[in-house]
Image (cartoon, rainbow over all chains, first blue to last red; front, side, top):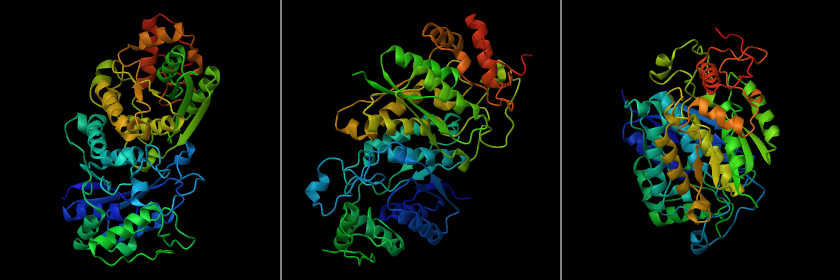
Length: 231
Length: 231
């Protein structure tokens, strides 16, 4: 029997590549997405498409209300920044940051992993082209894992030692894309844009679109994404 | 201006005492409860009564679906154990354990604390009469705090250093009750039972009721709780 892994899936480029790596390592896949009142709800459809394409054992969508607390352009009526250059993106933490989001996501994954008896949680965070989120740094992931091992029944009983796998942590976006292509990922299924139009087309100008476009360019891979603007 | 504190409130004896301690220390109170599909939904009403009695600045109820993953007698159709003696309670982790519950609760509190600029999160966990839950141990609380400081924007920017306060950690149930009484807590407002009857009356026999009854007895304080059974 193969080892089970819970994959946090946003339907985006990074988490889908993380899922491909988990599959390549021989894990049985359980994907978990969140309906958290995000403005870019097309990502939930992308996560569903990705789950089907990967033939995951089970795909769950947890409804959580991050708007309850506010504080982010991704859940509130704050404008998503556009056309920022690399210097602006690297300067501090952007308004698209959702407070404690990865902590909440990983906590849910931990609950499911414990019920499943899964020993691995995969998360597609990245510390290179990471848009400045605090909960995408290696020291954060290590601290979460240390906490998780103390938090759970299986950890206490010594039956499993849950590991938080962040295989993209030190990869550039270009290397992530090259890795995914090698592992057979169809990036046309994925969705990255923070502010798509009514038809779900990527804006091409938010931080996420810009990092994605730059990644495909630098990877010398054709970008299958349909952007509203590629100025 | 007083410092803000987010209090995880279940409407129970422990979290209400933790709230009294936070108030006594001069914090401005923000209470947070969870509607997680628990069988004992009377605790949400108790949390609301407690919030009113304490005059909290704001009380929020986050709806989260822990039944999505299953695995606990508190959310599934598993019988809540009754009439267990102290030895049985101390033997392993009971079926009332909800996977990763405190981790999920603290993660939400962290999100709200970050938005509020609160530096303290109070949680009424207890490592003495704690029913054997792994996420009620001091090393777990310390690990969560270490993770939380790396997880947040305010932590990274050095503006706040969030602390997880677990003031009941090393208290017996009797000492918790004595502390609460000294600080003016009306325990008649609180609800502890895992399996109340249709009118909300405590069963008197689940682990939580037994620990509560024993606590009042040992504290030599009159127990204001109405129990269905006190055999």
